[in-house]
Length: 418
Ligand code: ADE
Image (cartoon, rainbow, N blue to C red):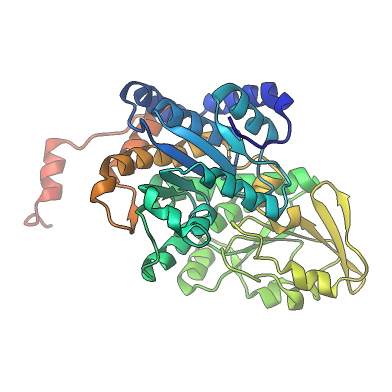
């Protein structure tokens, strides 16, 4: 079996931590049990380009239980948990190509190693695997029947490909399922981003001015968690509707030009580039902390930060790089990469349970329906979304009401008024 991981000796720790995550992933566990009996992915080689975490390990085990041959590489150079990679190789016979801290060059070599094994299905987080397939390896797209995509950024890239007629096989936008983005993006990113900032710096959030750039689901979750920790939160936005929502949710909304000189901590979650740039760095307070929780490391313009910095930057703690601008210190966490996965462990298992239940069921759905699908971006079918919500409630022991026959009739009628 081929693989490239940091250290096979870490496999024992990895197995223990994967089991801990599993104990909080009840929905995925029930899907795994069914997959083991029905084998819906029999004979299919799945290439998974995902963050290699304990939660992902449980998704990959589920796919394997469903009969798939599973190959994995990282979807970010800093997000791999090396013990998990080791356990997947050692205990699950899954070919993993991922090492925490790998260079960009090795990152793409790892994607190529997975693609060299000729997968028939892709499972992507950010669209790097699919983009590689459609650019440098386009001759290989005809052997891929379908794929899935985990994140907002990846879905945006896929829709751009679809609009240009560049997409060569159908892909399910897992991110757009309600049981994914309403929970993972909001509660997962909200908590794990603070976790990454706190682990890296051990700063007190109470009383700090915390600037959240972007008020999508990730920004909403982050802003509300930061407020819960006692920070004063400022939101920056480019979308009037979202800005208004932030105002009505009780946050201060300001342009970044104004917030830049006020904030103690800045976190970008926009999905766009250069959200923090030189004119902002120049007016920041001494000791300002900058982090990114968007998919790519483009939201903080690190090139211009390094251009205007005096002298060399220094790593003053693990994951904390100090720059000097106009004599003031600016601290960047995790090289501007996803702070929640680079400096912490990513979203907790119980929220990834729903995201990865969507991945597993979307894989089953595309495997079954691939021959009838076009090279387009598909949504997760609504029945799957609702079923995941139902299973999640069941797994946490929460019961809900049912409509009475009179209520059903009332909802179906249009004649009843006052
Ligand atoms: N994305 C965010 N958190 C994650 C996690 N724990 N595992 C995999 N992907 C993630």
